[in-house]
Amino acid sequence: MLVGVALVFLSNSWVHAFCSSGCGSILRAPESSMGRRHAARTRVEVGGGFGFARDSFKYTGTQRPSRLSPPRQIPDNIMKPDYAEDGTPKARQLGMPWDIPVNSPEDIEGVRAASRAAREVLDIAGAAVKPGMTTDEIDALVHEETIKRGCYPSPLNYNGFPKSVCTSINEVICHGIPCTNTRLKEGDIINIDVTCYLNGYHGDCSETFCVGEVDDAGKKLVKVTYDAWQAAIKICKPGVPYSQIGGVIDDIVTKEGFTSTRNFCGHGVGKIFHSNPTVLHYKNKQNNGVMAPGHIFTIEPMINEGGVQNMMWKDNWTATTRDGKRSAQFEHTLLITKDGVEALTAKTENSPRYWWEL
Ligand SMILES: *[C@@H]1O[C@H](CO)[C@@H](O)[C@H](O)[C@H]1NC(C)=O
Image 1: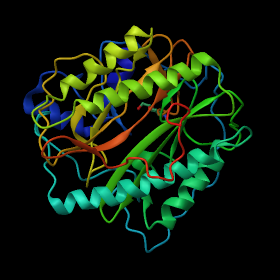
Image 2: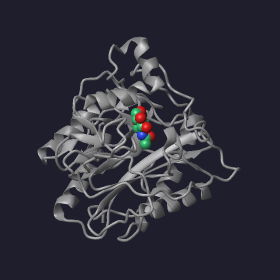
Image 3: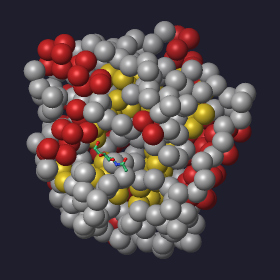
Image 4: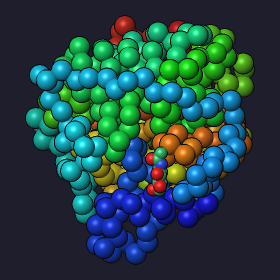
């Protein structure tokens, strides 16, 4: 229920700051713990309910919470973001939703380098995906490859997130927590969401990978998600309102009988992990600003095979579909250039390819 969402939002000081500046509604464009969580008019249920000791939670699909491995360490020579020690991000963007930071050439090169590292790490994680692998093994690999590149894994301790990557299988929409006895099974789909922090800048990308042979419906979900995401990227250039992105995605996925998640959105990224703009992935008329050269943000639609309703596990991270059907996602960090858009997390020559890219 929406109350659950409001509780999460009320605990977020950014929301207070934002709302005292006059947005008039607690439910407008709040920042989430990991991505940005947007309170649209959809039902959200929180597993077990807040504050109940007994876990009466009804899981909707095949995924279950599991055990965490011991915390992973970061070498002293790696530059850490301001939340690495206590979990609380200090640098925050205040201001109205249409106030969007313009990155200097130096900032752009910073995000570009972090984005390239994130791409390399994501490719390595994706290539490793196979039946029998645990999500904790994916976390270990991402952690190791991230620090090998001189980066800090941005998710680690961001608002207390316990691991270095998000691993979201099947009905998990986003923010799945890697654990030691969740094993990939033949036919699963898994989104791996990698963010690297390098020299003071974040670069953020994700893809949905198939574990062995996936059924035709699952493959269609992954392909349509990719197509909708690509179509949205194609419209990006200076002068285009951010609100147009969602309409492009919604039109494509609705035709296929799919739905676009409303409670999580794309975001600005750079020196701060999550900033303006708020990028909604569904049809909307929100004034979230207009694209201009130097803007850097993500587009990361989460497309559901079934209904749009989602729910949250008691860990306050794992978001799943309400009907237990699958959800797929792709994400790039994007730069608005003088006359168009550049994917800073674009694939390289060595990146693994999907069946439709071969
Ligand atoms: C989830 O959030 C609720 C409400 O803020 C809190 O009471 C609860 O302890 C949290 N659970 C976990 C596992 O952090």
